[in-house]
Amino acid sequence: MTSSTGTHTAPIMGISRHRLSSDGRGVTTLVGLHGCPLHCHYCLNDKCHEPAGIRHMMSAQKLYDTVCCDNIYFCATGGGITFGGGEPALHSDFIEEFAHLNKQGWNITLETSLNVPAHHIAQLLPVVDDYIIDIKSLNPTIYRTYTGVSIEPLLSNLTHLIEQGKAPHITVRTPLIPGYNTTQDVEESTEKLRAMGITRIDNFTYHTHPTQRTKPDGKQGKSTCNVLKKIRTIIADANHIAYTPTPCTHSSCTTGNCPMCEQELAWLTNRIATLQNPIL
Image 1 (cartoon, rainbow, N blue to C red):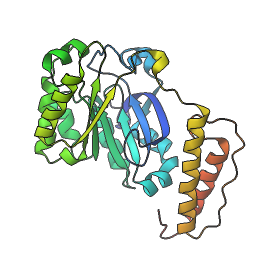
Image 2 (image 1 turned 120 degrees about the vertical axis):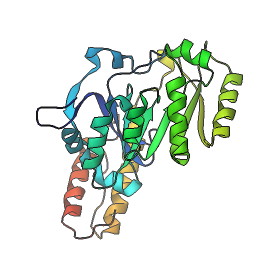
Image 3 (image 1 turned 60 degrees about the vertical axis):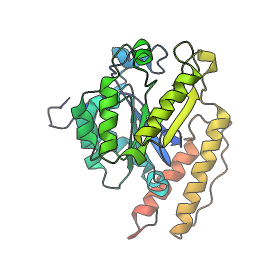
């Protein structure tokens, strides 16, 4: 979608900061974009099909301004922005514009089903660094039964990415989906992917019951908080900035962004901005 100012906008389901290794390299911010061509039985973001799932309509510039607060984390760890969903590739104009705003060189990851018209993938090829692809199953019958759509667009787009030399930058998720496939099906999909040149393959089992799904808790958030403190300390030391992290007094954190961490991040970011050649 294009706004009246000529910039592209997209429907945002949510923005999740301080992701560590789960959605790409380094520290990442996960941006969930609304809309998906699949209708998976165990959809983790089923509001991607409902108007109520849209929390914000944002321009690419507004999103950039929102996420740049974590610039020093992205630059120090090789992290950046992961576009997920829903199906983010449907918003290729928006992602392309955002990538052109990214002058710091943040890593751009696309978390995708690849089941979109080919022109979206072609448009994003120059600006996406890494791909996390959830294929469900390479068995066409299983795939259609689970997703409600044909597997052909996925296969065509995956083949194109491999032909363009992107195989080393692709991680494929091959889940065991209770009631839909078997361990043997997963093994067969894995073998086919390896034959195609894919080496990064993530085998796991879907947790199909809500009580089995992991939710953020205080302990997890505290762990993230400690990692962020270490990153700030390393950056400060490398730039000869006197900095001692303040002990966190919060009993729990959900994403590692307690008020104290946010204050220290802003302080360090401002100090870094005054340096001519900061080391990140």
